[in-house]
Image (cartoon, rainbow, N blue to C red):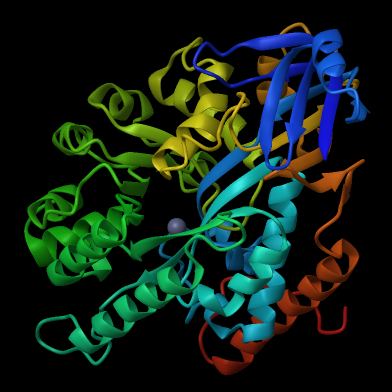
Length: 455
Ligand SMILES: [Zn+2]
């Protein structure tokens, strides 16, 4: 079955950042088979289903390189109380979700991701296999990573627990064995030691060895908070990046989430190793911080973008990334919207090891794309659509999303998830679990008030 979207503006996101007008894109099976002038493409595919694209723009699908879908449970609460949030709350509400509740909140996150033009995301979560099947059914391209730490919670002298490390690494291996390559190759897996302050040198080394032996990527949080830096300096005597470097952890398969507080020596180490960085600009701004994007790129790092916590809106992430980097550098022109779109699409695909398959609209690549309605009060006139969309676009401009040649959303309706049902259940789950936390710790001061029960 061939599909042709015709008479559209096509933002290819290719190396030359080509934008084509009154053009067509043909999709056969899971691949893009033609991009060019509408008359040529329609003539070459006379039997194709034709979709009218006038007034529409087709973009490469957005790639979210770091998220925790279950954090949708915490939105409206954890954005405003700093990090780590356990400094303010007695425990994590997320950790109190039942398996069924996890499935609901994860699906809610994917729903929001689809609605904001996302076609691929890296989900980092302990025991992600619990809801992998639900994620697979959404049709999204997914990189799944089971988050592992080996903190000794009994407070032993070394601070780390080898039993916990072994169990965590076993979960990683099971996830890869069970899921890598599933969904016609749409699902892949990463290894994910959690963060420098929660993993031992052994766990760092064994995680990288596992990733290299399976030929998959691996990811870790890095330089996320001042608290992390103090903690690693105290326990290891060096900054977090140096701790990773000393344990042979840095390399080109690695995706580092955050890198907000890295100094110039750390930036140099990351660049020399050819690491990928995921800039989670919106949550960084909410935490009052900004990654040194220009310096990381100049050093040789790959650059992707992600949402991290409480939101899955990559349209917002692009705008936040542009604003934050201009403010950080007091620069009125750099970065440009085209730079930000590249980090959120092709750059992200590259750091996830998927650059040959997705991230731009080019013949031979997977058909991962989204289409917006440009005839909106905040988008016309459409003289420079990439800039118009990054500066003024909204997730609600996205009308259609395709992954692997399949429509996940069309005519503004999500086809792979029962949206009404998930939204209704997620509203209930969120209220239930936060009240459960409050009841479990009645004597601990709670920093926010929750709405009345049954309200
Ligand atoms: Zn994270």
